[in-house]
Image (tube, rainbow, N blue to C red):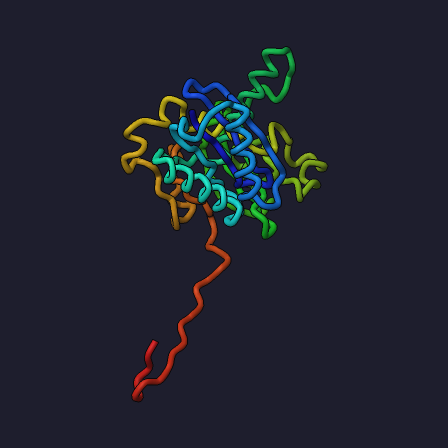
Length: 265
């Protein structure tokens, strides 16, 4: 059994997934306190799935990109559970999970005779605050071809147009604060606005979550790395926030004092 959770967007989502990939329980809550909400959701998901914590084999957590504090809360919760139970904790890109939902939604729509954006590349965009957007580009199969990166909304639209040569299709809630882009036809809104936690396990691959290779140092360790070091081929990450900017908080400078005529730190 796998526990999956994501707090990298404005919605906290938790899921229980069987080792065969079956969704056993899932919930999504718009959060003000992602840590408290996630813990409540985890207990509820375990009860609904009739699973004991001791039955968990791994924890999969969305590492963002997302606001540092809320994303970090999810990563800390996941790491704590993994450490306490002595089971692996692995991270997956939140944008990759949304991208798989887009592709699955298309397949479902086509199977039912609906023409819902049946083909073509797209981007996933989420709110980065500071009047910026986290975004990544995907091909029609949901494979990441660029990003994730952070940029102003108008720059994201221009970059996506350069990549696709047409009005970009956009999933995620990144443009929710900037409705004029959709209203003026500069983007096409498609797919889900938020991730569903169980797709995190699908990003990595159900059969890969417990592989020895995955937990032998092969995880992409992106902590403190910049966006240039994000591996396009990576599907499994170390369980730390995928933050693409310098943290807001800066270490305080140590005061310089005089000691016997010499400056001391």
